Length: 101
Image (cartoon, rainbow, N blue to C red; front, side, top):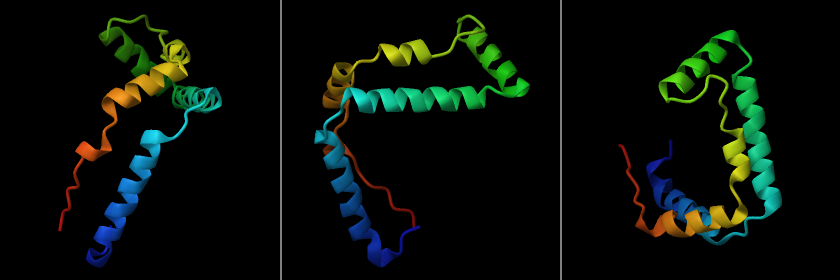
């Protein structure tokens, strides 16, 4: 948690990071690193038989083939797609903070 005397500093820091992300450059290398990282994470999650059974069941529930993975979908996303979606949906100025005391 954050001490009460640090809340304003924390809020400013969060706003600064979000505003930086709103305008930062997204490169093909950034996109590739993210997709490769998510792909490796997905592979690790699916190592155990229990998780394999879970994902097969989930895929069938969603109407997808048992062997479906989202990797091809991730590789289909371009940098232009990311920039377009960020411009349309990422609006940190519309956000708000909820502070639980």
